Length: 299
Image (tube, rainbow, N blue to C red; front, side, top):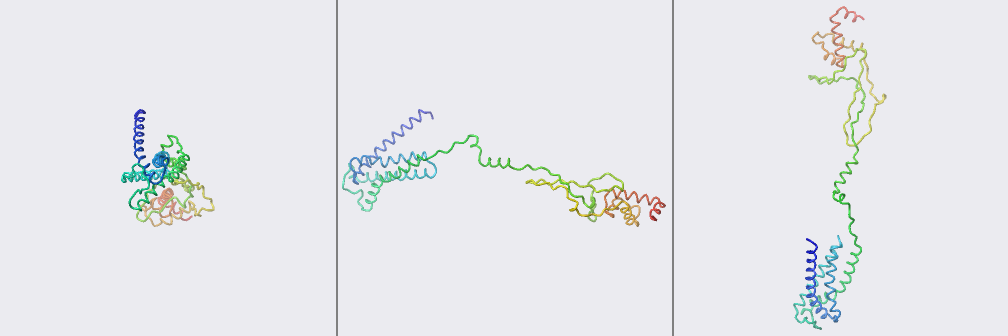
């Protein structure tokens, strides 16, 4: 709607309100004379009621929250009071012209109520009007925020803040203590496949290689464990190559050549796969050379 159309609409509204006020002014003036107001007071009486209605309407457009609710209640109350006075004026023809010394209603309690209503409206207009003006003068418009910032919901800002403040998690490599032996004993009736095949080393250089494990990714950062001190490690017996060979000879003394395999020797003496193969080759070599084996046994 352009400015010309808006101007015409406002002008039409003002005309309608002015004519309505003129009609209501006639009725309220006659009621004011009936309850004892002089000519000047009766002339100003309609401005007290209908004027406060206009003031409350403007206050509802400016105020917010509880203040706006209060202004709406004042507007509704004075609108109802004006409606009652106009209704009584139309119901009692004797009031037309401002007749004095007469009742607003034939029933005494109803007359008392109507007189109380007509006489209390000016006092209420002073109280409520002053309060509304004070609220309008002390009202502060909400601060205008940046358009880009206001468009972003509060939940999105909160989520972005949490996302930015979240600590970065990374994979931590922790060096664990070396186990007693690199082999593991599988359950009876099942053979565990060898996960890795280390390089074959001489029997005299059998050493346990420390195992490196990757720590699980956690939501909260934690300090790296580091190397376990020697005092905290579990003591483990270390067998020399000669002790391994002697133990293998003792265990496999009653074995046939078909039973003499690296896996069987590894399980029997609880050693690694590499040592099992070395022991198998050594024992087979001794069996293939009876004289060498006899000399070794005598020694």
